[in-house]
Length: 265
Ligand SMILES: Cc1cc2nc3c(=O)[nH]c(=O)nc-3n(C[C@H](O)[C@H](O)[C@H](O)COP(=O)(O)OP(=O)(O)OC[C@H]3O[C@@H](n4cnc5c(N)ncnc54)[C@H](O)[C@@H]3O)c2cc1C
Ligand code: FES
Image 1 (tube, rainbow, N blue to C red):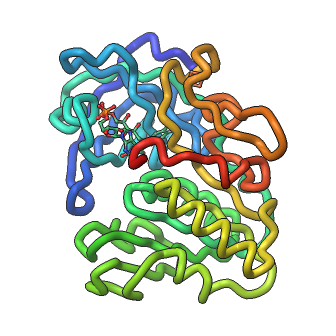
Image 2 (cartoon, rainbow, N blue to C red):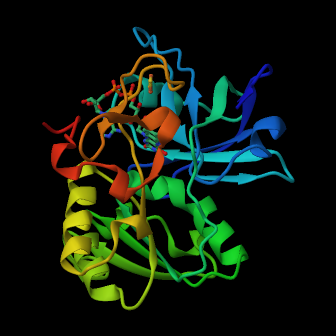
């Protein structure tokens, strides 16, 4: 982890898809240190927000010292971030946690539900750069909420939308069920119920859970292993800490039946 002594500076703000903001910040020491899948704790200065907010690095460019963050507005912290503009400073803590293990050789399938896609541009770029065959399955409520295909050069992209406005009508997990064949490695991020449905489908199709890695978005306090606020149940007994053991973990390390959807009850 590099503690950012000098703040990052916002160099670009855009709307990559409906309901999402992309902030690009300049901070060379952090940009060179990120493994795809790691996250930062971003300090926010909205009223009554004491804790930093965790965000995955969507991508990094070590040469230009830039890092991209893609997010939606759900509350005070993200609302404050959403109105940052070029020239504003951001206090980053990170990179934190464990990124994805990208050292395999099998074809890779990315399963991204909603804003879960935010972690994947840099992951896909790395996998494609290593000569891996990559299929990206993107799911959203409607086509305008899908990250554009050109954010995944070198990968095959397939879409699923709840309203059928692009690609398969239905869930991105259905698409996964109809896509795979042979040995693959799966990388997934999205709401907890989507991940649970993915695990159920994988079990039904005899896809070993060890071949699936998920990026967890468990609510966090400190982000560095001291508050125990990000515990996730392990099979048998005990807990993982998302901030230290994750956020990217192999799916067989989680007791999926005891995972709660912290945000939707
Ligand atoms: C490791 C990690 C990486 C993350 N990366 C991203 C990312 O790249 N892009 C992104 O958009 N978000 C990401 N998140 C989620 C993001 O941290 C939260 O959305 C953010 O902290 C909300 O802060 P807030 O102050 O705006 O909302 P709060 O005031 O904290 O919460 C407002 C409402 O949103 C709900 N909420 C809070 N967090 C989430 C969540 N994760 N999912 C669903 N509902 C939530 C709360 O329950 C509450 O109802 C990540 C989370 C983790 C743990
Ligand atoms: S967020 Fe505090 S221990 Fe993980």
